[in-house]
Image 1: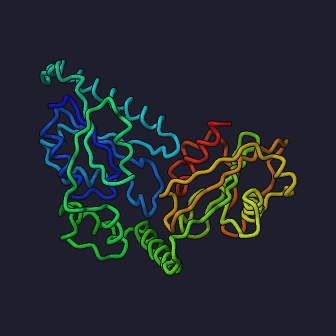
Image 2 (image 1 turned 90 degrees about the vertical axis):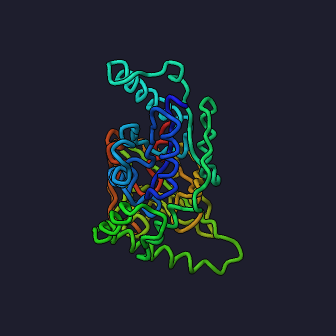
Image 3 (image 1 turned 120 degrees about the vertical axis):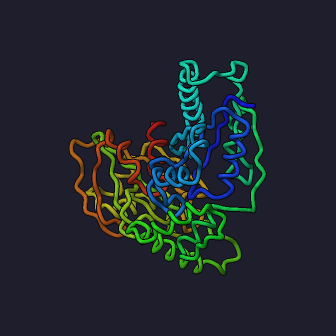
Amino acid sequence: MFSSLVYIGRFQPPHNGHFATIRKALTLTEKLLIFVGSHEACRSLRNPFTTAERLEMLKISLTQNELKKITFIPIHDSNYNHQEWVQEVKKLSTTSLRLFSSEMQSGKGVLNSQLSTHIGIIGHKKDSTSYYLDLFPEWEFVEMPLLENVSSTEIRNKWFGETLTEQDKIPQAVYSYLKNKEGDEWAKIQKDEYRLVEEYKQEWSSTPYPPIFVAGDALVICKKHILLIRRGAFPGKGMLAMAGGFLDSNESLKHCAIRELIEETGIELSYKELEKSIKDYQVFDDPNREPRGRMISHTFLFDLQLLELPKLKAADDASEALWIPLEDLDKMRSQFGGDHYRIIKKVLSCY
């Protein structure tokens, strides 16, 4: 027996494999901590459901007795700072267990002191996306066998393509929940994006190797503000992002970032003025950062030492260009497309 077990997942959406793991964990522990990842991420093909929606799907598929032993803990993604993410998981686990211990000692139960520090982490090492299970060597790992080769990605794709059935390895309660969501406006937008992305992939399907795209992105700061665009097309239509785009075959990465910055924001500065303001450069290559395929971002940090914010005029792929106070960045994280928020935080933390 464990005093507690940690189970980490995105649950996009929760399926039979997730619930099998939860019920296995409940036979081994006094307290199950379920971390719900991608908290406050924008809706996307990879993360179409909000934290609240995923929590509801989890709860309606569990019994009241099961829920009594479970604490759900939302956790933000941190693709480019694993150490920060690990520390946050540990901190939230400690806080939750202290509360649980306090409740037990107050008369609601008796905590076995010999088990009070016996913590484990449960999961299945299915592929490279399960790397996080090895980031907690001090916690005993409980291997959960793969159930029925079930995949949230497959379920999402069927839901987007409107071919999801009651036999698709999800509880009846989750199936009914997903069917009820199909008419929501955000769901229609996600399904439109799914069709466009699938068409885009089809265009590249005859290439001998999977295509790898390269982008030059511009992170621009000035007078404690950051320059952002609102995307005017899929993927991520309506979402905030850095200015940027695909690398042309005849240009350098630096030129690409500056060109896209000027084209999308209409910023009233010359190429030379922007080039002189470059202070940093980093590469971001999360394999899942873009739905159309593998997209590697070369992000340039521009620090404009000016007395006033330059005027902007959105064009090209941007429906809007705007200056946002840096102090408002964290409050707007759910409005950012893809991993742009996490890239911005990583670059600024190093500057």
